[in-house]
Amino acid sequence: MRKVYLDAESVDFMIVPTKDLEFVFIQTEGKCTAKINLKPERNSKFKVKIYIYAEGSSEVDCVCTLIVPKEVSGVETDIQIRSWPFDKSKIKARPEMFIANSNIIATHGNALGTLKAEDKYYLASRGVSDYKELIKQSLLNA
Amino acid sequence: MLTIKNLSARIGDKQILNNINIELDRGKCLLVTGQNGAGKSTLLHAIMGRPDIITTGDIHLDNLELHNIECHERSQAGVFMAHQSPPTIDGVNTMTLFKEIHKVQNIVGTTGELIKLTKSLFNCIGLPEGWEKRPFNNGASGGERKKNELAQVALLKNKTKLLLLDEPDSGLEQSSRQKIIDLIQETKNQNGCVLLVTHDKELQELYKDNQLDLSNA
Image (cartoon, rainbow over all chains, first blue to last red; front, side, top):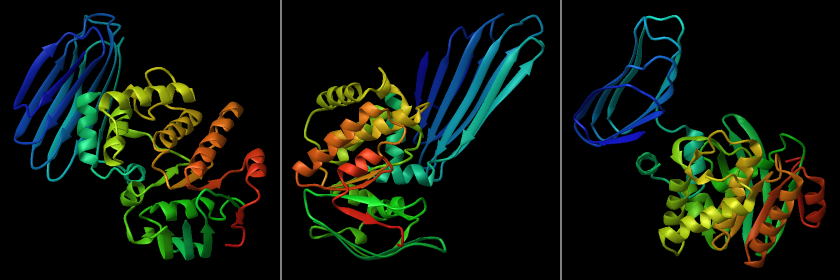
């Protein structure tokens, strides 16, 4: 499942994940507060990817919370958040895990930053200089 | 015609090239040789306009002063470089990048035609099904990255006036070598110049008649 939020203000939901999930936040103005709560069932296996793009003076505050109670075992998951803050925008993003069962495999990653100098040079060598638009279009059209 | 006069290049405090002079007519290929660290790749990057390479001297492509314009402008003017180590670009979708290249390079054709052409180039060069949907070079092997470069050479072949090939064969299976030879020939046929860096003995043998040795550069 893939869901794109464009200039959202508030996103708050709980989901029982049964397959891989992808959430994309594109923020060009205003502030977005996002709370994604994951409550998996026993033996479920899924990956979660969250992409956040912000430009101008927009802000995104995103928390992805995994909740696994004591009676739920066998869950395997990986949560990855990748954020691109451009201009004067601000992104605060974090994965949280509350796990009460020892038979769980849960990993997470969180990376934030715009393009590396090496990537910008590669794109420039293709004639592309509007990196922001390229990332935005990539996230919208993937 | 490519004319390079007294080109010197350094990265930080490290001087890499000193007073390089090249004259290359349209429709010709120059084989650039030299041991590891001689500055072969640096020469290509200096021509392409890598920002961290500080250069002095002149680089002209016909009447255009490449040394006075930015890297993306050099590309739009017809300089194409197939990189030795193409990066993975996090967040950039392959087809979206090809569409953007299509736009900035003013290639004639509709989006639908470009998508069809791009898929057929990937298929023809031996990239896996669905390659265009991936993030750029994500999870790609060295050989797949090189094939992706060659697909871009093919996409822009009608627009390329100067083709810079930095070890295009490394990591590729033997059967793909012919594709490189074909692309060099097509560029030459369209009056483009080619600078080729390679350690492949057979490719070196093919282009040995016009050679620049950077061993003492």
